[in-house]
Image (cartoon, rainbow, N blue to C red; front, side, top):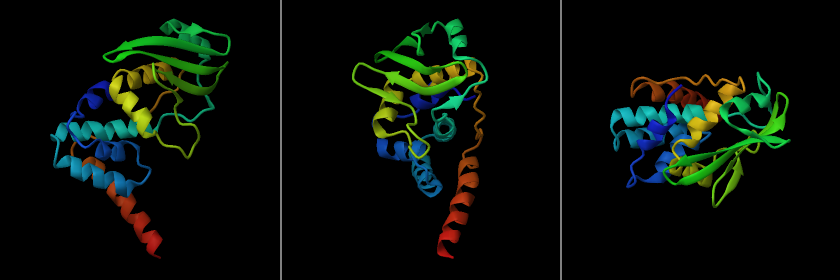
Length: 188
């Protein structure tokens, strides 16, 4: 699994955040490939590849409700507090404290909820939603957040297996073909 904190650190403060947001959250392969190619001209190759890998991890975050391989009570081994209807934990990051909460019981996780000082949101409200601008900004502000979510999912036995890109040409080769096929289907 890629180190998402390192991938998020590759986003420079002076970079057009809309390009990064399009790459990381777009449901359209064509939009993502276009953003990738523009970023490829602005960032070092390693940074662009890491962002492409980050996109794949974000895309695989489970929609609630979802079944886990282990019961939610296994989160207690990772210092989560049982509240009766959820398991929650506070984390420190460079931008303060955030909370992570897995809502549900048994092997049914109804939602993954993130709490910050200024916001509260559930990851992927439904199958059609994408991570929105505010949620992505929280990921960037709290760079350890996504790694904490992935660690919690591992405790739950819900392992993500994203494709991993190694070279700068891997992402456009995989998604460019899918975007071209979809465009041809739309024409005919």
